[in-house]
Length: 520
Image (cartoon, rainbow, N blue to C red; front, top):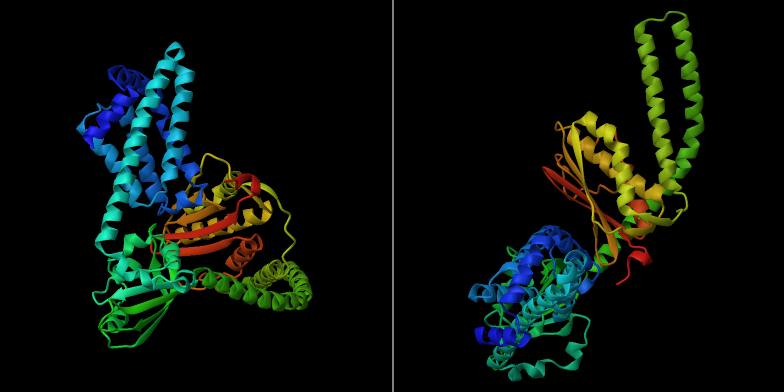
């Protein structure tokens, strides 16, 4: 590899003068490296295949810091053995996470453009020479990173030949390859010997990357109960069904699969068991949304009729209680009588509020859709809730991307969603003496993600049906707030979910990006 690097360096004619140019450029460009890094990963969010290799926001933050260190190294480091080793290590990481090779080219182009813009703006007459040095340096980086893809491919070919794939080629018939089900063949040793295209798509792994690896370790999260699987492999059970079993993908995400494992031992065969799986992740999510919507519709119909029947008597009762209170005050009634009348009046008001929420839930108004910038909407909600935050001893942090995220939505309705979730967060933390809340906005390939996070005590049961109408954990709650949130979000074609444990609760709202913001 050292010989290849030296050959490449001579080819692009990278020398001491180039390193001197880069170091001069570094002094001016270094303050902009963090911005370049943020822009770099914002671009990645626009592309599904590139975004799929990332496991979450914590990883993105680490990668942004690593990119800044990489730009420092490109501009200042001697091209010695340590430099070669570090470049190859970066390329190896790209290979390991299955980043498509084409994105390495396009990513390096983004750095090219950013560096050249800075050189043109700040270096004057020296800009041309510095730009040439930048091109040489980045082309060296790109060439070495691509060498790691070549070496990995060669190693994979070698492993493929060593495993004698020719012996198992007869298993890969068209019926198996074209089936919409995951088909995995398992050996006596519990390793994978057959892996069809549907299994490749679901796991984001290529066939030659999993052949010979342990089936349980590769396909299930660590700590999964493997007793039934082992029973099939050992011939103790002929068939076992696993409903909704989690499947681990390359990016760390989990999908749900209904598996059926069958023992098929034969003395002359390498494969002794088959696992046939059906990916039910999207189906389960759709069924849950449908169930929730049907439940909300049924309750909404009942609520509408009930609210109409109750509202008029309540208005009359409230009016007469008001007259009664005034009369008692004029006649000098005792404090107990006045307090009793006040309690009755307050309860009537509470029932009136409940009726109003019933009607909002049962008869949602048509959406008044228009282009909405998500960051501006969240900032407005933060201003509205500021007095409540101060009173409750809570703080609020806004974590927003630089690029505007545009959705096609009813701004009043989405504002109501964010406000309801944030007020719930503040109320939860207030019971523990305060805490910190966060409104976090992120772009994903086709949706805008809004997260409301708090440091409250969490839900009593993390699996509680919090979006069901009339479910509440508050003594004075109506149980309609989160049901209304769910209805608004689903009416917009989005989804809302919650993750909760003591000290941290996060509500996640995803809404489709507007076409202008969703170009790829």
